[in-house]
Length: 383
Ligand SMILES: [Zn+2]
Image 1 (cartoon, rainbow, N blue to C red):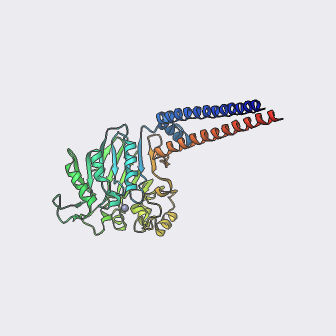
Image 2: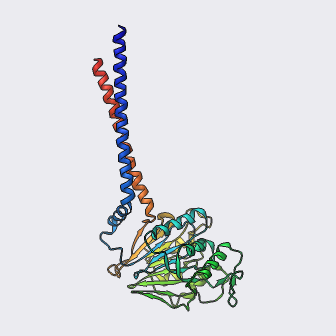
Image 3: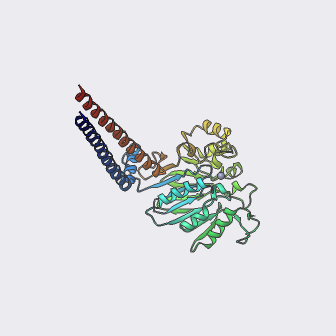
């Protein structure tokens, strides 16, 4: 009796050991697959993401030749990056200096320049507010800047003030920006003004329509109102320009397909007359979710809703970075916009999450099958 009981215990132990072994084999196989998947996504994720994004909506458009503009998602603030068709590039503003915004902005720039020379052909600060200039000092650290466009505002602790221009010394970000800009070697510094020469390149032209005065009461109105034209398509950029600055350009500004709305969709900008002069099809708004300023304002929303030319109003708070693209083939037809493509990293993360969720699900099903089959074996033996 005792020996048959021992035999049963031994058999049971063998069965258990076999089950443990099968379990370990399954775990091992899944770990190997997971490691392989990680490697493949790590190596080819970028290409896969680009392909998926492109094919989804835009067919076979060649995005390597043309003009692209990103209104970068920097929460409450503004930063715009433009890749010009002749290989030059331009940054307008740099978002706020808060830990989360600085990270978002740096991630965008570092991702964009992962495999590129860290050269910025044109770097512009529109006006001396931190939600636009917060990361400008870092920009001068990261890039070799060739031409710096600056507002007609100075910092007397580090430079002479020209004429009766505004002198700001109590903003750390601005002092650091001016210091870095002055220290930048071989960098041409130009003050934003209607008198600035056009920036002209391969089939594109960048024109200043304001500021028309040398001094303003509100910082926001130092923001230049500018038009970037490429193959007849026009994009109007405004920084935080308000009604006063908008009035200055009513007689001169051309109609533009795209308007980057002033001052984050505040009621004090994008007035009716200005909207009617621009007649935009797309209105872009760089604005933070649940911001304390109540942007975009109710009046702004009413005005763009009432403007007959406006087809779409795009908010960074809703779709993240807003990307726009024009090339020769598309010119005259439409400006392609593709929202939320950046940061690409997020899309790669979603591929990781998706792949590992599927792998995890199959793993759990396998363990379940392993369990059921061993129980069935037991039952069969008992019967
Ligand atoms: Zn602002």
